[in-house]
Length: 378
Image 1 (cartoon, helix red, strand yellow):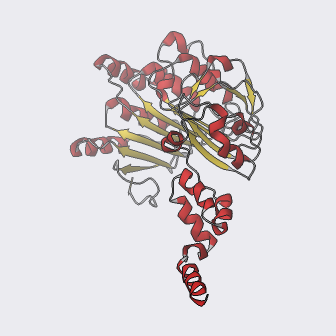
Image 2 (cartoon, helix red, strand yellow):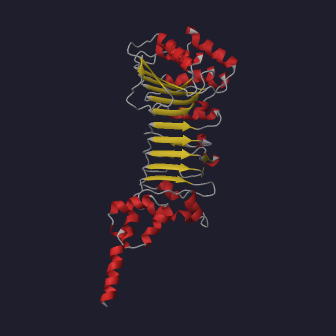
Image 3 (cartoon, rainbow, N blue to C red):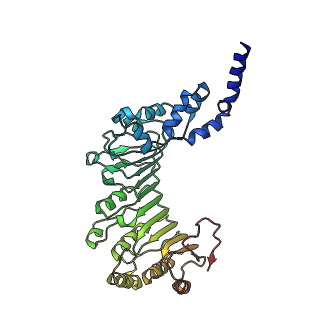
């Protein structure tokens, strides 16, 4: 009997993992695939409560392979369980073969949600009652939802990354502050109309420039509302040589409270004719594409600057039209030659500036943006 008690005592002594502090056990679960983390609840009563508090889950390819025999709602019982246990942040990537359960869209505790890789085909107009941040990645919005205005009462930020059919997804946006639309392969003119619906309320806009129209006839039919709240604009893949698109982009800057502008440039495989026409447009003082001053714009960043003539004239125009400007960051592209960089810098420094406080910062492409701005000031 004594030997049995001794062996039991030794076994208990060896189970040191179960005696670890709860926060250590939670770190262990974070390192495990979601399915394996869930199975730790079967180890002992010491681990059951840890799983219930587990706050970081990944429903990835491995997870769905394990549950491939289930279909529809059956494969998402654990998600439904989490919705009853205070789930606030969820990142869920699936495939078109799996249908997302309605419990995700109706969960009252989720505040930050990222969804990817599925077809959005939900007829319920009232969704995400507590959500503040929503990210769609590689999501296709079905034509079946076109015309439905989704009510997301507390939404502040919506992002679309490489999505299809976003014009089919419309939300009421009383609190929307940030809109991101990036990662498009080709321009779809209808979508340029779609995002103008949100310009009256948002404060920050992230936009792929190739989403915008590039034909004069199309541009003439689009009117931007006054973006009274817009403070920050970030544009990606903007070709300065496309004069129509450039003129259209500059309409976004006619916002009375715009204070930060960031533009990522691209050559866009431009022809010599395009470059020549764009240069003439930017050189013509009577045909300036910015008709009024950008009165409170104080910060500009130009990324992937190659030193081309249209790019330099574009910077010149911004310097002349920004009386409150304080800093202009020029982030050179990685393959710019030293001689070209030096020549471009000399030209930029000769440009007139509407603001006496405006300073130009030259940065290499690998320089971090937030490094105390320890760069070359001019």
